Amino acid sequence: HARSPTQPTRPPASGCVHARLAEANCFEAARVWLEWYDRGARGCFLKQAAAEVLRSAAALPPSEKPSPALDRLGGLVRTRVARASREAIGLHDAMVGIAYERACETGSLSIPALDAKTAFVVRRVEMKLFAQRTEHERREQERLVRERDFLATHPDAFRAERSAKALGKLPTAAPVLEVNLFGGLDVRLGRDRIDPSTFRRQKVKTLLALLVLHNGREFSRDKLVALLWPESELEAARKNFYGIWAMLRRALATPAGECPYLIRQQQGLRLDASLLTSDVAQFDDVCRTLLFERPGYGGWANLYSLINDRFSDDLLPSENDNDAIAALRVDYRNRLVDALVAASLRLIAAGEEQEGLWFARAALQRDRTREDAYTTLMHAQLASGQRTAALETYFACRRFLADELGIDPSLETMRLYRSIIETETDFE
Image (cartoon, rainbow, N blue to C red; front, top):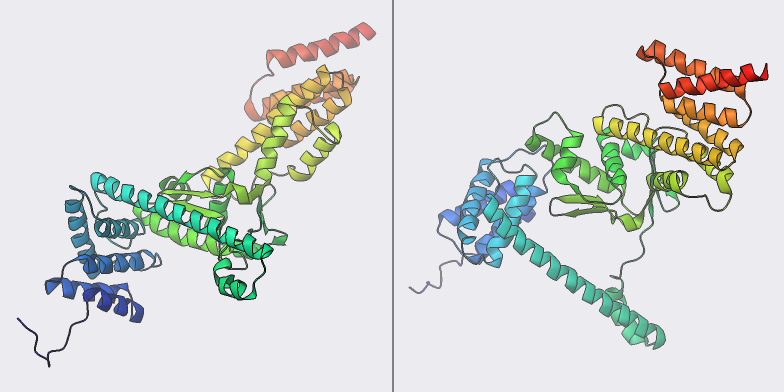
């Protein structure tokens, strides 16, 4: 029937919800949405409004607790999206499904996430949208680059003024993120060192270290959560994780307020390897050279100085609360000692006894619990004519094995000791 001229016109439901979001918060917006839904409002505009409410809920800090209104809205969305996924899901249903999943991931809803089949359908649409957006951004950037190059060769004040705003969107080169972990955390953006107090939260430091140690490869979100909070329930730990992730983004923000270094895709998280440099990558190069190659400029002496300067201390020595970091610390120490021992033996075999002695001593200095480090030093000392020093090394090894482990030296170590004694007897 026709509306009377005096009857007020109701604004669209989506407009009311968006206005309430701007005025208040997602909890109030959820109540407005439910009022419209209960009055019989349906259609794409209501799905758009629901997606906006859920996206706002997903951005809440972890301390905010779910509300009954949000949970009811989420339950209606979950039912609708599950029904729509049985056929060819529409864009609006997929978008609200994506927003629902985000809200569940951050703990903003206390109801279950989408079932596996529905989540797969929704994620597939999300991936297509992401690919389309990426392709559009790539083409737009190429167009702007062409326009900038044209303006550079065809000066035109009017055209330049008109294009200035659009060309300002072209990305500028972000400063390289440098993260050093050996001997303690040290972070720099370009030439500027980030104040250590920025990483006063231990979990923020640990998260950054884990990402750096993963060398730019993708980490699943739940694996990171389990490494950071191994004794917590997964859902509770997820809520804490997003707060720590946000703190890390702020800590690594450029002067322009952006953070191009942290990349989050679907359930995967990583650092952009093209913008990252670290002593962890340098450590891998050093170990590879010690094991298999000959050092370049400066030779073995330069490599020895580099090891003493950069890797004389353990990985994050003050991080004692995280089991994953503690295990990695031991692993990196063992890898370095393995490489130093191998380099020493290679040098001795090549007739470069003095250099072999340097690396053997460096191996034992880093780990006095390894018998192979003692025997390698004994080999280097014998090759250098230091029989007395080799005997002292043997007795130090035997004392350690007996006092700390209650065992005797290995047959190889005993044979090496007997060879020294027999050499002494022959000289007599």
